[in-house]
Length: 201
Ligand SMILES: C[S@@+](CC[C@H](N)C(=O)[O-])C[C@H]1O[C@@H](n2cnc3c(N)ncnc32)[C@H](O)[C@@H]1O
Image (cartoon, rainbow, N blue to C red; front, side, top):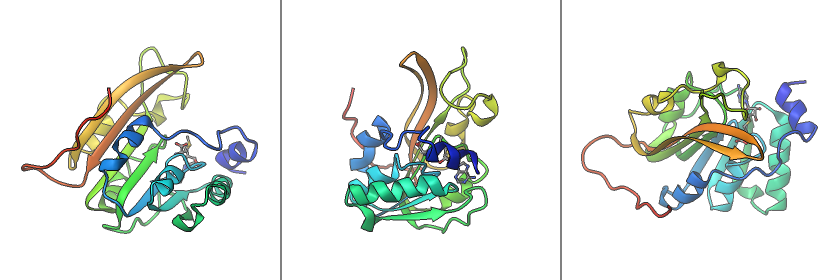
């Protein structure tokens, strides 16, 4: 059994993880419509976006994670807005200019990021958060640096978009430290543009 299928089946991963506060703060500034959550897990972003009114494709290689998403979508009355896609994101043929919003949380996929960005409609927004290499080493997330971003790696990978928010930070939770990079970036380029108003401290 796949590592993630096993973790999800045995309840070793939260079935209702909170969406990022940054995603929650920015969602009202995003275009409405269709969303894709890459490596959706148990639905951290997918179910949040469905509750916000998006038609969401939740893609993951783990059937066990997708089963949990379908159950939770039923329980929260959003199942008509959530489609699950069982697929390997490293090989998936992302459709071009299809999504208003794409989210990725805690899945390293720089190889496919060009194709994922190309799946944004003009004006569509990418939200991406992932673990960082840090000193001292963070204790939440992958045990090896190989699966973590280096400083500014995520930022550099998105410089063809308009960066609306970028942060690298650490957080203490229940005695453990996480180090993450978070980006919100829009599929627009250069010139004079409109920007969302900052509305949190
Ligand atoms: C740390 S979990 C994150 C899940 C969710 N995004 C979240 O934030 O809670 C990593 C997820 O990536 C998925 N995953 C790993 N490799 C994948 C691949 N090649 N294609 C699609 N999903 C993959 C796993 O099945 C798992 O659901």
